[in-house]
Length: 229
Length: 281
Image: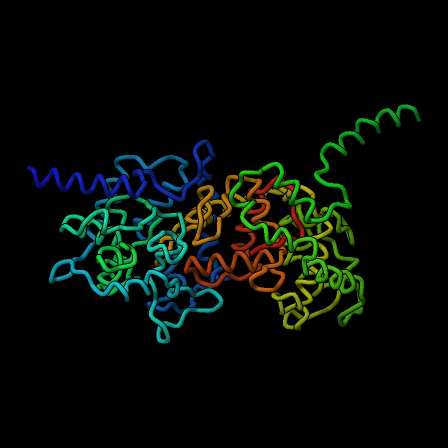
């Protein structure tokens, strides 16, 4: 019982400090008229039109432009939420959470922290998976974790504000098993906590490897990391 | 006669009241007036430095070069672009840029400004799409950017007013809105990930919010000098840059898909004064 309360408190703290609610992000504002079925059908047609996006452009992960444009179930649901102009409803939120929960794989030896200095390099880097007119070459450079685009982390660089500040992340929260799992889930698939969040699914979508996630985790939790200084 | 004068007076008063800027206003003056109405806006007020550069914006020279190119007889057909119809009649440039994308009966298509310019260079001047005059789309030194900057400048200070008279115009605008919110790719991004909230930043840069037309007019006011790139950039250059960061495959300019996106984003600035050319980070 007391353990449950502790977990609930940790999650509540993490959620409060994340500054989020369960409202879906990146959607139309309330009061706007949702698009018609015709507009939605036309958008799908235009997405896959041969003369629009380059459908057969090769992608770094293998596959093509068409594969990148093809939505999985989470993306479909979260697009519907974005187009509804309303916050996500409870039933939809539960569904997105369940999909997320099923997607998360944990390291065989448990969640461990890697090298915070490597994590720092990853957190700074916005390289990787960009294609369009000048594809990122993953053979020349390792893809990054793009954290600073949206988050403030250590104060030696200005971070974005689309996501909450993560400065002193480990210093404030400690490094209990519960908070480590919470942070791991947030990186792997944040929809498990915030359905239809703006944040990418770095683990579930194969953007970061298990080792990279461990390194980014170390950047967040290691007492020596600049995030906690 | 008297009746005509009496009719003309309210018409003239109306004309004055709806005109967003005097023809003599510079882009700098259009922007400073917008800023004076939005003093606390984080996006609009983020760069004092760019504002200081504006009166001497290199894009103004790009426009001058564009004017000469526009009037010059060029191409295999030895014709100037003065016969090009940008929607308001052959050679009529004033206010044409802010009404695009629009439907053109001669092609039976909704066209962006860039597509229409290409169309005229090919049909009127006889250029091939592979000729460098048409093919080179980016950089202040390109004919396309010179011409675009000159023509766009003839709409400086006028309110964005993309046409919605033809059913195809409305259909593409509405599809563009869906595309704006459609999430896909390895990062699950849509356009609203960055442009769906007000006052948010990507690292140090404040992002424009789609539902704030005063912010959005600056966001869509291209051509603009990208100070960090030392070049005048186009609408499509911006769209392409966003899609690149979104991890989407390459999008072809001139496609209906691209036109739909540009129709929606222009419509979101409707009624706000265009800053042409603008200066950006």
